Length: 149
Image (cartoon, rainbow, N blue to C red; front, side, top):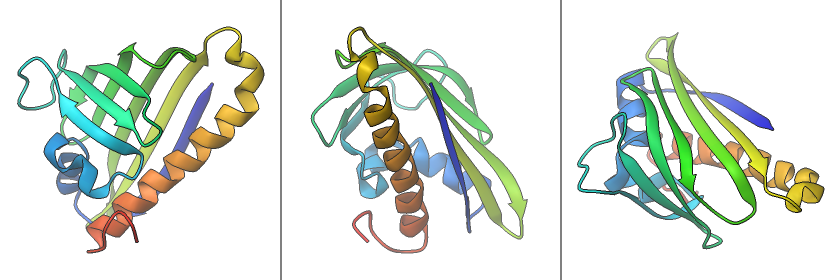
């Protein structure tokens, strides 16, 4: 399955890219996560760097960066994750939208492990809601709000 959602944010592309890839700051704006950190001594994201993200339900996922092209795109794929996913990948794309605005596109690709495929519509709805909430929270944070506004 693939999900994508985009939103224009009133901030330069480099700033938005850097904010989304700054693990010490992720919890300031991202309502999906309860923990986010780079692993293995990595100080910054880059191709081959691993990260651990724990969502607000307590499910954890370890990912590895497969693409990192500042300020255009960052992409990760799951190396270890929750029992109900057999695969997961995420891509964040950032393009200039003019007048200091940035178009931010989040894309998720996933496959459910057997027998969880029967829950596909339920999982689709959750991912669709959470991807939209993450973009809205990022936009609110950039406007000077918090992740809870």
